Image 1 (cartoon, rainbow, N blue to C red):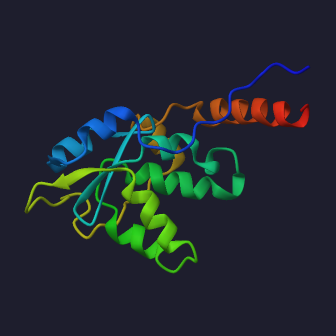
Image 2 (image 1 turned 135 degrees about the vertical axis):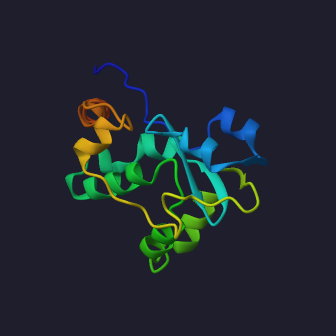
Length: 159
């Protein structure tokens, strides 16, 4: 029999994020969380720790979704309100997306805070190489994720 491979983690808030729920954050604090393993965003003045979502996003192993990963990674540590609405609002799953996003909410921005880098909530998209250079993800992030997913696929195939 094939060796047991653990199931991929479901995209649920981490316990540490749950402990922080209800907090108030400055943009300086949000900017500190701009890495695939520590991923915060702002949408409509609310702060979300989307680390589990980033870690399990299908875009890491689906070539057709690489642009989605670039968009998400470019948004980390900043306000992506406008882009979030523009990308998701017209989708059939809009209500489900809002519920999922709400599950990652850890607090609000301090009243009057704005993201000076993205004042209109629009993300400045980076290239893959720029994201690696910025330290938002390791150079081998895709390889690690693909290997994990291949192990899971092999496990399922041999069941």
